[in-house]
Amino acid sequence: MRLVLLGAPGAGKGTQAAFLKERHGLAHISTGDIFRYNLKNQTPLGLEAKKYMDAGELVPDEIVMKMVGEKLSEFAPDEGFMLDGFPRTVAQAEFLKSKIKLDGVILFHVPDEEIVKRLSSRAVCKDCGNVTSRLHNDKCPSCGGELYTRDDDNEATVRSRLKVYHDQTEPLEDFYRAQGLLLEVNATGHPEEVFKQVIALLSHDKD
Ligand code: AP5
Ligand code: MG
Image 1 (cartoon, rainbow, N blue to C red):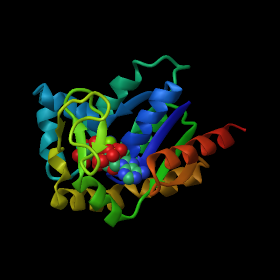
Image 2 (cartoon, helix red, strand yellow):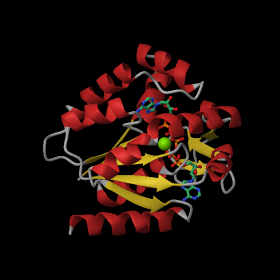
Image 3 (cartoon, rainbow, N blue to C red):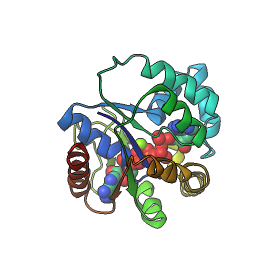
Image 4 (spheres, protein in one colour):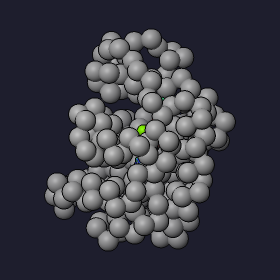
């Protein structure tokens, strides 16, 4: 199965991708994680991406499309994966359409104010990359590692990212709805409840 996980920053794409990976063995491609990995290793790609990420803006299409094109070429034609955080513009979606056939696009709906609240407490494990919330944990609940806050999770940058989502990424909802690929989820419940909806939609979609 080849899926796109679509939704505003903090909608829970990474959280649901971790469930789909762990329980259904689907490979997870997150463009944000690839940029952060490159930044940690101080590569030219990471340093270039940082300029945009810190401002809550999108990394230019040419850079992202080249990176994703290379990543996709690592997969065999029958291998499944989910794309998290790509595409984010109509140009990226057209590029993806020219490369692969998608089975579905899961759209996670969460109101903006709930997102601002979630991202003010998001924490990521330095050791295993697990995403969690400081409201419930001061160490990683998965491996006990130290938690850190992403540089782009301050309120001003979160509000810029939300604006960018509404202006540049939201048009993809109609783009995929018109192709009959959009599967919509109310993502405000507990993560396990959201996951149940995802699985129900995907099983229904296969029938
Ligand atoms: P990226 O890393 O993709 O960030 P994002 O899209 O802003 O999304 P997030 O990772 O912030 O949120 P998420 O939906 O994964 O939520 P999560 O599961 O963590 O991109 C970062 C930057 O890279 C972009 O701003 C851009 O600059 C650049 N970039 C990346 N891709 C690009 C592209 N294609 N084109 C151009 N530029 C690109 O959950 C959030 C929090 O909520 C966590 O604390 C979690 O524990 C909690 N949570 C999750 N689910 C629930 C729930 N159901 N109830 C309560 N809390 C929940
Ligand atoms: Mg994420």
